[in-house]
Amino acid sequence: MGQDEAAQSRPRDSVFTTVTWDGLHHVADLKTHLNRLSNHAIRLRMTLPDNLESEIKKAFADIVSLKNGQLKQPIGLVKIVIDCTEQSPVRLSERPITLRNEEIEAITVPAPRWNRKVTGTKHGDWAPYHQARLKAGSKGSDLALLVHEFSIIDGDRASPILLDEGGLVWHSSSEQGGVESITRSIILSKLGEHGFPFQSGNLTERLVARAHEMVALGSGMGACRIITIDGEDIGGSADLLTQICRQILSQHYADSSNWTKMVIE
Image (cartoon, rainbow, N blue to C red; front, side, top):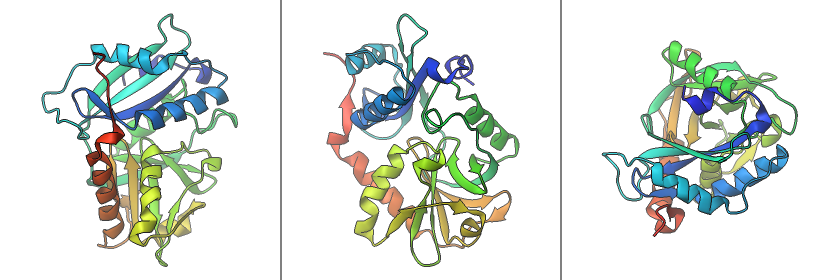
């Protein structure tokens, strides 16, 4: 666990987002991330710097490029933290992507809960999410799925969707307490074009047990097919939804307009 992940304990001390990075000088979907960051800051009663994007780009000068960096391809992640307890509130940290577009195994853990405005934001008290991820790793699993009132509402770093018996794609609603996923929103905006209707609802035990396919979506994970949860198989051998999700993301990142150059010239 990084220092910036462990030091914070109060939700309203900071707000953050994690953007896809090409390992060089570009990040993806920056405007969308900053919009979500702003919305979360409002809910947390935090004031962001007026020149936030400019301050982020200045801080990006300290980011170290990856040796395998590839222009405008999802190679790494940059975490953007706005910390109200610091004199210089903008803090960035980088890391490579180590798991993406693979078959994964998951476990379930109880979802952490805060008050209504805090729950569903990316805030300063993020330790329970990191603890869930560590617990998954200790069990030899790749992802912790967070459960509240017998429904999966989120993942420790990816948002789950599932395909039911009738060909309908389900995702949890933000009202249940999960973080609004930017990667999921990219996927949902294009799923209809591929013949997949979708709706939000409760990802209950019964729905998950009867799912034909389940996919975890995230800035780092891309589209990972979930093959087991708590040791139980999910779906069969079909992976059409997974492949369509990967295709949508590949096309999205191939569009140069979705990338922002972070170097100030």
